[in-house]
Length: 104
Image (tube, rainbow, N blue to C red; front, top):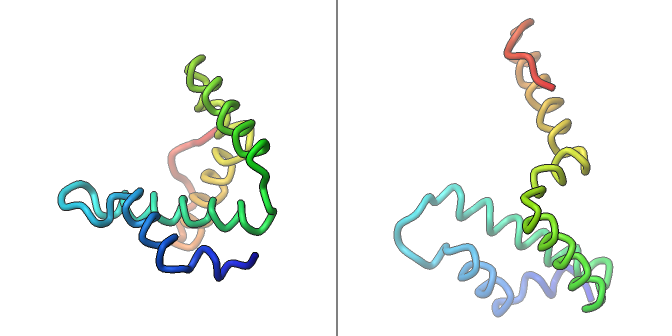
């Protein structure tokens, strides 16, 4: 399949519903972020032809992390926390700020 599958009306409707975009109230920016995250995950599933077994293995992994209250460790382990630091450093440099809040 191609990314065109994720762009089909039925899939986009599902993603909008899942992200809460069709509901009133709530934080609109957060809804848009969730929508983008879901859309990117669906595209990844489609691009890599993720099997149901692989999908449920990943879900179980996240479930186990949550059960041990270790989900935050995943952010550091995947490098996402460091990415945020690099991104903020670039923002600070673009704003010509030489010092800022130290980050780990």
